[in-house]
Image 1 (cartoon, rainbow, N blue to C red):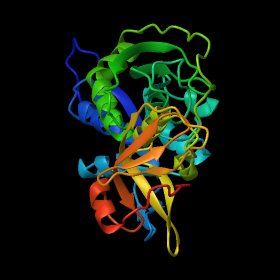
Image 2: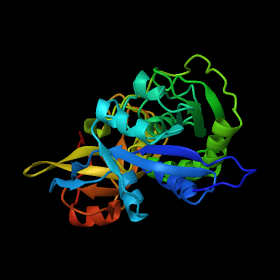
Image 3: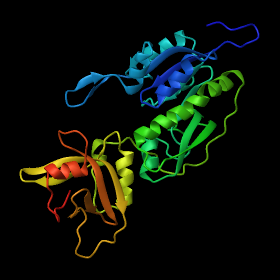
Image 4: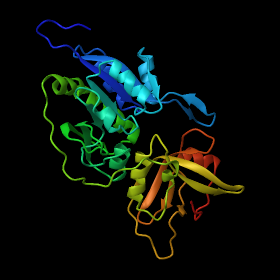
Length: 325
């Protein structure tokens, strides 16, 4: 890619991504004359689903559809990968929901360092799952942060932040897509200003929350002694993965159900009432919680597709007073 005599050369960028957040950002960069993508890398392909089908990451799938070659990288800190980067004369490494920690040698390798697009308003929600954390905690606003990476966990100085309102019933998957689109609007400009105009960055303040760890599959299990409104946030926060779930007693034992849509209503638990108890209702599964009542509106029974609670109850009558757990 060439530049005119009066126009600086495009910025040579290597893009590291794994999650859906990176897809709209890649779309924004691919035709921008200020950026030259000299390589794209993602995590290694992994076994997915019950059939253990080996599948590229969401970001890699999107990049492959666009016609890019995508390196599957076991470790970005390995000497052979670092040598490949050096040979390409990288000016900046862009990191978006990649999933590996970058060590000092890699951070210092590009001329202008490594730029991270983080899906929260840092210093809030440093760590692996900031989108889930914002929804789980009932935040009204989140956003994206463009940050120069250092050896800490999301502790580097900040170039720019962009806030975004969280919609009332929004899930993690939906919010992730909107945050990606938000970041895509500014990413080329930020890269250009960092590499060609020496854009200043500001140190972060102290952390306002504990670092958010990677989510595990069992984090989705509902504890019915919690507040019903908190459980609604949990349902939203754990879509599309790992999904909030519980177990319902059946004649042969217990059946797992994933809850995909729910709302809450106020209720003060009585002295004789047990959290997890199903209340009489033909159309919605209403369940007592430690505080309030959870109204299960949509669910996915084990081995089935998603259905409304009314559809489920038609085929699976549930006795009132049964206790989920």
